[in-house]
Image (cartoon, rainbow, N blue to C red; front, side, top):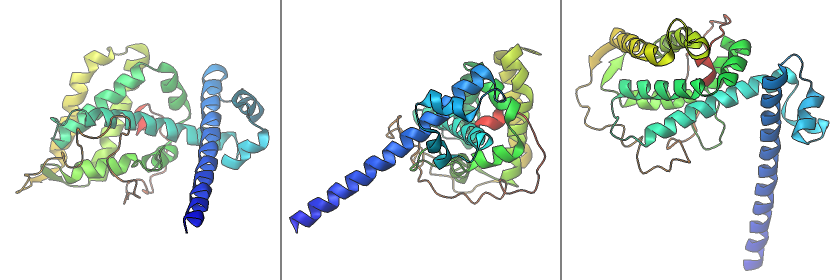
Amino acid sequence: MTHVFDIFQERRLSVGKIDNNKQMKRESLLDSAFSLFIDNGFNKTSISDIVNNAGVAKGTFYLYFKDKYDIRNHLIAHKASQIFQAAYADLLRHPDIQDFEEQVLFITDNILDQFAANHSLVTLISKHLSWGFFKNSLTFSPFSDAPAIYTIYESLLSHAAYTYRSPELMFYMILELVSGTSYNAILYQQPIPLEDLKPELYDAIRGIFKQFRIRKKRNVTESTEKTISSAQQPDHPAPLRAVKSKNTFAESSNQRNHESIFLSFL
């Protein structure tokens, strides 16, 4: 029996190593594509460039992506989710922030700071992001055991002090507001620098929350501490399980293209 168990363990470890190798190759291709898109531009980057820079065979590329457009779309969703997960991880380190609306503002502020520190990412995403790509990033997670963006939003919302009408529309309007006002402020300091814009922007977001409130919940005795615990390890940003979100918002029939900075992360 012990011998059989040992064989099983060896096989499981072997499968785990294979999965890890696959993940590493995929990550390598994404990193390669990102650096080349930034340095050379999307149109001037070929699949051969990507695989050569990643140090993998060309056939390996097609194990993970259909074409250059496919890896671009995955890259945008991947980077967007990474940025959001980093902001969420930072929120986990602040268990004193228990109000839903303040949590959203905290995450927004963190994400804007990340973009302000990485203009290349802002430029890449703003050029190629469309509403369709963004919808996909809402339910995408870069880690198998991490929740998607909209899953996190729903969990935070479930612990809110208020009930809100059309929370999906509320989410959309906040994204549109932030994306429409922050892009030029980050890249060109226009019409004012980002730090000067933030107080006005956050007041406007609070106005959206107020507009969508229905009523205050009667028994809000439990905070999001159960969902967002300071005991969570910072390197593992999501205490939530990765589950498929019931995201009717992401399945909306609204297909218009929209280039924006904030859509990239969220």
